Image 1 (tube, rainbow, N blue to C red):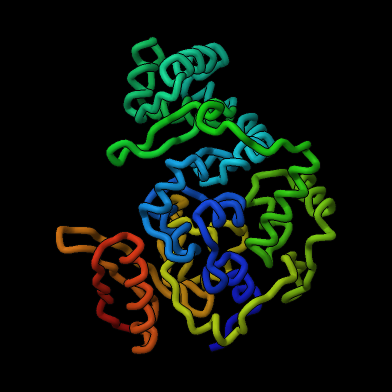
Image 2 (cartoon, rainbow, N blue to C red):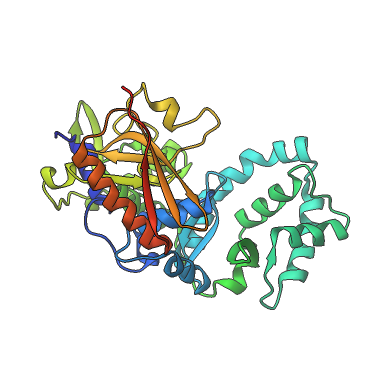
Length: 365
């Protein structure tokens, strides 16, 4: 099986196919930020790249304040290493805040006065280590006369998280909680803007490369000017390579051979960095299958990867018996591929702490 050089290196550098990392916090720090609006999927995205991880060990890293779920970039929830939250947010959220300000006022009547009142209410109810679920936070705001209905609440909390007031803490009975960031994370790395740009460029291309300038701009949400500056400042730590007539950047390091990686199947969660972190996703998804993987509503479905390509989607179901992984391939799967996917599904079951059954759909191609 021939695998493209881009896919080969991305599978390596993202730690999907080789070189599994240690604790969950190490994985998150390596990737810089991991998209996490789908909580269960984001936990597996970390587990997929971590040696021997379990659902409990990843959630324990959240409870231990080693990784944080918040809105540091693109106005979307991500997992970020605790020491990176403040400098990343300071670098990337101002542009998101400025871009959304008019919409928040026009569609939700969220002006400076409402946001100021919201800050005061939430500091009061969350101080001294209090953790409140989303519904409890909304109730506190409603009691103060700040309406949270019709998605107003999520825009208030998201905006205050982008400002660095809030972040999400550990779950309480399967519900996310909000905490005050300054109380939750007491230590952080301080960086000047140019230092932060260089560090972000270095982190992205080392963990996601080979990638283009446009990919980095998409992932970070920064301007092309800022992206260019970040690359220039980090240039001594980046390798440049022309592949297929386009300039790509990466760490310059390689591990396993092409043949080893090509034969390994993987069950990626929805919104995995292997897809979502690039503006151009054609290396991973054939155009004819793209609508089945990436919906028009921005939903990235969980993908079956073989040879660096998405060859189908999958979904899980949990009942009293255990976990069922149901495959929906885009092509007929070979017996050896199904056997290998059975082992991958078993690893997912180990991560979840549940017995697992693999359920391929009838293949009609």
